[in-house]
Image 1 (cartoon, rainbow, N blue to C red):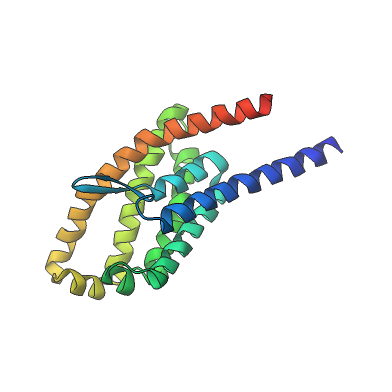
Image 2 (tube, rainbow, N blue to C red):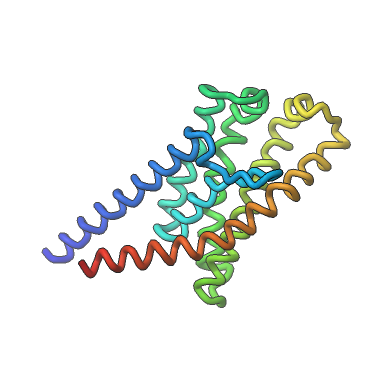
Length: 203
């Protein structure tokens, strides 16, 4: 009976956590300036950090659900609130907006549990954040190059020879700073969440 009660409590807590992360994703996706940090000349995206925290703190399944939720909201925003031709012609495809956001948390979770198990917890978090952020950038840009290349080139006014220069520039200008930010922020946030939950448990 005690185990059954504990299972129900754990399931309820898991749903509460999941709901909180869904709420954060909603705010970051739909409210201007909450999904990125503006450090001129950079706009550092931070929504993927929320997905990675869900993956590393709650588990791979939960991270996958949060990543999928982010992808669905990104897809909806491309249809309902497009802010540029890029949203209309490129990010309106689920292969660009949804698929990379579903894959990224799975790879981050695998790396944390299997690819870096010989390292300390803090270093595993740092490397998972770094790798996950770069993966997010590469998966999205790779999806654009594979599935929406013609539309992307037309919007950018570039030819096929210039495609990889444009994508490489995005990785250098945005992808690397975002990865460094993720590697720094994720261990701090997860440590704070862990301490907070332990304090709540003691109460």
